[in-house]
Length: 132
Image (cartoon, rainbow, N blue to C red):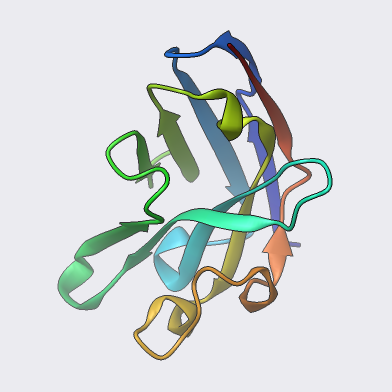
């Protein structure tokens, strides 16, 4: 059974940092398009970071503009864990954060890596609160 479990959320002041973790069971990250999404109260769930392994075992990452230069997605294959390092946090980053897995094609130029509907496996989420 495929399962994703997030952890690492919490409350920080603006400018602070947090590292989220997403532990996977029954899933090989190298065979999926992996995404980090967030959802603030009253708002749609939005993708913020994606990663995938391409030909030659090259690891690719992508970010939405609002988090570029502040967030870093990475994975540790030995621990089967996906990470989201979040620096220079802003109050508008406050949300429930989810990791998700989808078919590898989601991360291709023909897929939609920022759509929640592209992903088939979700974690339960971890709350991030940034105060000003």
